[in-house]
Length: 83
Image 1 (cartoon, rainbow, N blue to C red):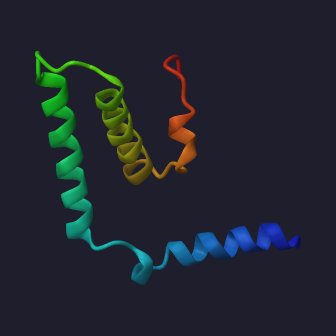
Image 2 (image 1 turned 45 degrees about the vertical axis):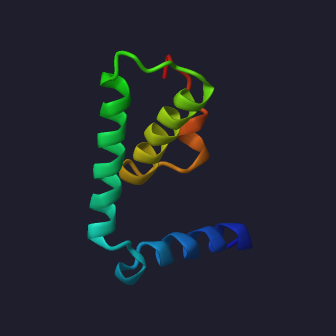
Image 3 (image 1 turned 90 degrees about the vertical axis):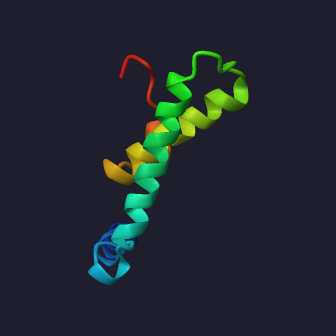
């Protein structure tokens, strides 16, 4: 077996161990913060959508995709609107 394949398999197995999983309360806090902040931004009629605001909303969406849909970090950021 090639070393890169073996290394990848070992990393995936190690990350799925129960002692390596995050504390459930922390995951709930992150979920609550991201959903609350996204809804605040989207419901604010007077928010001026500058680069910083858009980047914050994009980062919140990417963090939700990454954490709760088991996507790799850079993969959601490369998605296009059509996808």
